[in-house]
Image 1 (cartoon, rainbow, N blue to C red):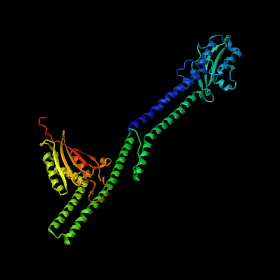
Image 2 (image 1 turned 135 degrees about the horizontal axis):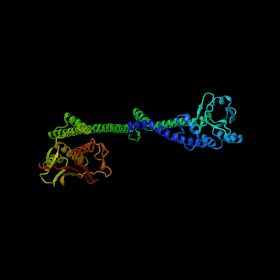
Image 3 (image 1 turned 90 degrees about the horizontal axis):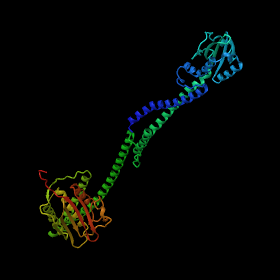
Image 4 (image 1 turned 60 degrees about the vertical axis):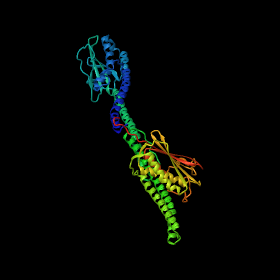
Length: 498
C-alpha cells in the first residue's frame, strides 16, 4: 500500500472509526440504560427518554406515576383519606425515588417523607380549582430542593378542597442519567486510545521497522560488509526503497566480486606473461651474445641465429598482442570492421599462410571444403584470422606426435558455415573440456616454453566468435587429438520487395 494511501486510511480511520464505534457503543449503552429505567419507572413508551432537556426526561420517567394517580382520582377519592392505602401507594412511589403529599383545605394531611420540612410545603402551589387531568409535566423546584412536582386539585366527598402532589427527587434520578453520559465518555476515550494504538502499531510495522532495517543495512555497507540481505516485502514506497537498496547491495557485491576477480586475473596474466616473456628474451639474449662472441662463424649458423631471434621476437609480439586484446575484451572495445567474406577463398588463404610456417615444424596442414564455393559470411577478416591462428597455435603447443597433423574443414550447417580445426595432439581431459574457454585456464599446469602461454588465447577466440553471432565448442580424446568447432551465419541478400 502506497504511503499516500496509508495516510488517507489513517485519516479516515481516525475520523470514522471512533465515530462509528462511539455510535454503536452509545446505542448499546442507551438501550441498556433505557431498559433499566423503563423497568424501574414502569414506562412503556421510551421515545424521548434520553434527551438533552433534563426536565422533559424527568417528566417522561414520572409519567407512569401520574397515570397511577389519575386512576385514583378518576375513581373514589375517599381512599385518599385512608392512611393504609396512602402508605401502600407511597411505597410504590418510593421505589421510583418519589413520594406522595395530600393537602386538604390548605393543610398537609399526608406526607410520604416527613424529613422534607414545612419549607417545601409552603412552596407548593395553592389550590387552583378542580381539574380533569393531572398536570402532565408538573413544575420544577430548584435551589435547596431538587424536586419535580406534579399537582392535581380535586374535591373530597364532603366538598373540601384537596390537592394531590407527586414529588420526585431529581438528585436521586441524576446518577442514573449521568451514568449514561459518563459511560459514553469513558467508552469514547477507550475507543480513541484503542484506535490510536492500532494505528501506531500498523504504521510502526509498515514504516518504522523497514526504516530500521534500512538503517542497519546502511551501516553494514558503510563498514564494508555486503554479505547480508534486506528481507522486506510490501508495495509501499519504503518497501520499494528497501528493495531498490537490496538491488544496489547486490550490484555492489557483484562489482566488488568482479573487481576482485579482475585483480586476480590481472595478477595471473602479468605472472603468465612475465614468465612467458622470459623464455624468448633469454633466448634472444643468448643468441645475440653468440653472434657478438663470434660463435656464429659460418653464414648458415648466423642465418639460423637470426631466424631464431626473429621467431622469438614474434612470440613476444604475440604475447603483447594478446595482452592488448585482453584489455579490449574487458571494455568491449575490440575494433571490428565487418565486410562480406567469401568463405572458401578466405579460409584457403589462411591455410596457405599457416602451411608455410608449419612445414618447418614437421606439421602437415590440409584444407577441405565441403561447402558451396559461392558461400559468403559477414565478418572481420583480421579478427577471424586471429581466431584461426590462436587455435592452430594452441594445437601446435600440444602436438606430441613425431608427425603433426592439422586439418581445416569447412562444412555446410544450414544457415550457418561450420569450421573445424582438428589436430592429432595429446588431447584434452574430459574433466577439463568445459573450462578451456575460460580465462587463464590451462589444462597443462607446467610452465615450460613448449606449453607456456598467457592462458587467454581461447577466451579471446570465444569472444570474437560470439561477437560475430556464432558459437564455438570443442570435442577431444586424450592421446588422439582435439577438434575445435565454430559456426558463423551465412550472408543472404533479402529481395527489395520483401
